[in-house]
Amino acid sequence: MSLQDPISDMISRIKNAQSRGHPKVSFSSSKLKRAICDVLSDEGFIKKLEITGDIPKQNIEITLKYFEDKPVIKEFSRSSKPGLRRYFGSNEIPSVKGGLGVAILTTSKGVITDKQAKSQNIGGELICTIF
Image (cartoon, rainbow, N blue to C red; front, side, top):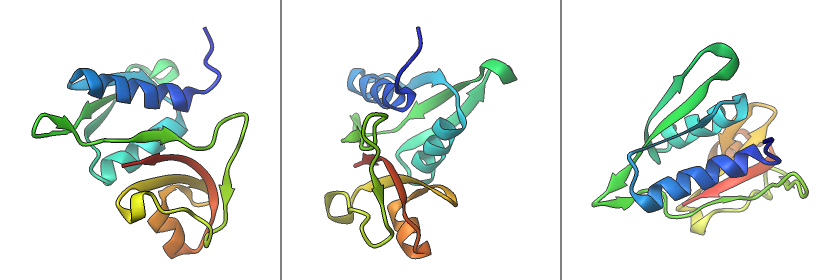
């Protein structure tokens, strides 16, 4: 079965695993998924990121983060979809929950957060938002 939107599948798997209290979640790997998970790790939303398997068929395994038995990730949503891409200039990037959340963008400099994009004065495609 082929997936139409693998990024949405990754987000759904993470949200479902956290709602059930699972310590880990795994899904197939790609460069974009790996870059998004690196941003999640850098921003402190997940504990650990591991790449498992051989080169042609690798998987990403994430150790989820909880605080007082509640998931650290409260909201995780896909913004730009295959049917409707959302692009923003550096001065148009929306803030998430008044700056408390993080928007993840793909730019010419790679996958970065909204704060990094604003400081580097570059725009891009808004992939997802997390709070």
